[in-house]
Amino acid sequence: MAEEFKPQYSFTDDRLNELKQLFPEAWEDGVFNVDTLRSLIGDYSTDNSVKEHFRLNWVGKQDARKIASKPPTGTLKPAPGEGVNEENTENIFIEGDNLEVLKILRKSYIDKIKMIYIDPPYNTGNDFIYNDSFGDSTEDYLRKSGDKSEEGLLVSNPVSSGRFHANWLNFMYPRLRIAKDLLKNDGVIFITIDDNEIENLKNVCNEIFGQENFIGTIVWNSTKSVTNTALISVSHNYNLIYCKDINHFIKNREEFRLPESGEGFSNPDNDPRGPWKADPFQVGGWRPNQQYEIVNPNTGKTYLPNPNCSWKNDFKKYQELVAENRIVFGSSGDAGPQRKRFLSEALGRGKVSKTWWDDVGATTNGTKAVKKLFNGNSVFTNPKPVDLIEKMIQLGDGTKNGIILDFFSGSSTTAHAVMNLNAKDGGKRKFIQIQLPEIIDEKETAYKLGYRKISEVGKDRIRKVLTESTINMTVQENKSEFGFRAFELCSTSIERWKNFENQKDGLLPDLFSKLEAAFKNPLVEGTTPEEFITEVMLQEGFPLTAKQTEVQDGIFRISHDWVPYTLYVSMLQSFKDIDLVALGLSETDHFVCLDMAFENNDALKQTVDNQCKLFTV
Image (cartoon, rainbow, N blue to C red; front, side, top):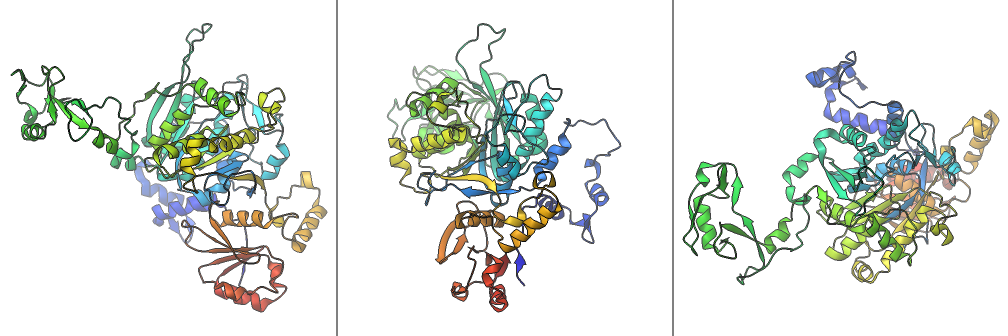
């Protein structure tokens, strides 16, 4: 018989299923036995009676874990007209609290994101963090929208607070926990931070992602100016890099390399193989089969490796390299041997990145780029330079076709960088930007230009970038990378799913009144088919870019490569004049509709249920 359509976000069940796959022996009569698990993992288990062992702990950590696993109470609704090329693009911009949005996206995008970049609040004592609490719901978020007060979207976290660092960690932990779930097995996350929380951030990332999955810390020369009033003028920020699974990068090192620019390559001897660069033929370490004399044919001078060093190859390989004209002795002809490395080879292999980055723009460059887009107006404070994020994306997505997520998107620098790179190298990367609708102060330039929320600035920046000639001409050729779709966090469109809180909604009679209203009309008044379809899609695990086709009036077919079945959705209130049999439903298809649409026609309802998996609201 048809099933009631119910919320399907279940973090706890997912975790237990993962454990069941890893340790099936620990499941006894359908119940998970912790003692059995402890015996299975043996010496790796921790005796809770032992209090002194190394771990990161802070006030509120348990609640932060609960917040991470608590299902969302809201959904996303389309914002038609806010985007560009909305029918074809696979780029996404979402306005809303990033924690709730990440929870909503989790079912559809788990193990699907190639790279995440975030630039969260640094916890300087002067900035704001998001106003999270264990009891928060989407309704709470919507009530808070528009404030910076204690009841608003943002709250200050002064250094004088006794829980200064704990507050920040409670804010970061659940977001990073869900971010890990979203990453593909070959995915990477980059996090920009400064000295205030670098140690705590690294510790919490070690716990969430695993210390073994730490790749490195890039130090970025973020400012070229000097603060004369400081004891030491801080001119850098940190960028922590963690991967989902280090084994992938150990086996596929070539993926995690920057593209070769061609700088330093030349062709002084007109080699038909093209430009080349001379690499040292000597390496560290003494190897007996790589110790031999090399004679410079130009001068007759003889060379041996330096003490505790060896030639890069054995003598047989060296002779092959000489025959291939791959050994040179410097421009003067009187130098030790070097090996030619051709640009054509380097372009395929790429180059290893160093951890000190001063070859990309500083914060001032990011500011100039935004001002240029907005006709000389400074509409955002300290945006990251586009080429910094471009370089990270080049490192993090060697495939050039991954999904790049930024859930502290600010002025949308990450989206700008994705579009720039696609235009430069022909990539097919897509972006997802998530930004809180933070209110802009009336004194700010952005407010005077008509912007009321930071998210409005971010969306308009994307629109302006899309009009640039290079991106417009190059990217528009591939419709899926050109443009973006906009969505907003909102409360559920299904009446009975809305939370009842007696402190706010009244007493028991009000609850009965709400239930009666939900029975008469299961959807919130004013719900559009697009909104209902989007909520059902996300509940069923379909991404926001799933293909939608109206197969009959008011009935939509949803499909995507990520989901092994086809979904049909309708919010019609009656199927009286609809031929459901003509849909050709199969037993693997899911069909979600209003129960009232069958108009007490149990025979039709049973027929549809026999054809597919029927869910009713």
